[in-house]
Image (cartoon, rainbow, N blue to C red; front, side, top):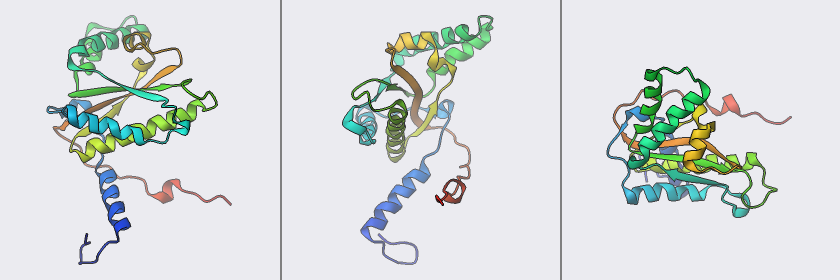
Length: 204
């Protein structure tokens, strides 16, 4: 591999350049800007398989993903509306419809769930959530590599009884976020990213 100007890159530099290009290409695309086609079954398996390479102390697999197929989106829409009513019993019909509509955005939708007790109880919740975050990032990067846009969404509905019941979450499980995947229909200009000087210090 050559840089501009004809200078050769060492094998390690080439891998680093490819990794940097992939990470820099990843951008959050709002679910409403993600359309068909989404990843097919084979591509989705490749994307989800990337999550398995996240750090996982003791290999306890403290997280999982739940795919929400199109046929189940109406049930998710009902859960979103019920979650809104849990928070606000006076929610207007148009507000409930807005909550329901969120379930139908993006061709592929996954829920990321972390388990606070699975495996070794000595592995704390913070470490489990960190592992889940790495798994999610691996998934997003693989989706980017395959040419798809992605987004993470959260919100108060994740803590609702309606959503917990729909996904059958156990007492020690928490819904972390939804992951949306699809073809980018439109995107905003890439935002400026922080540089190491903004977040790296040295212990004195």
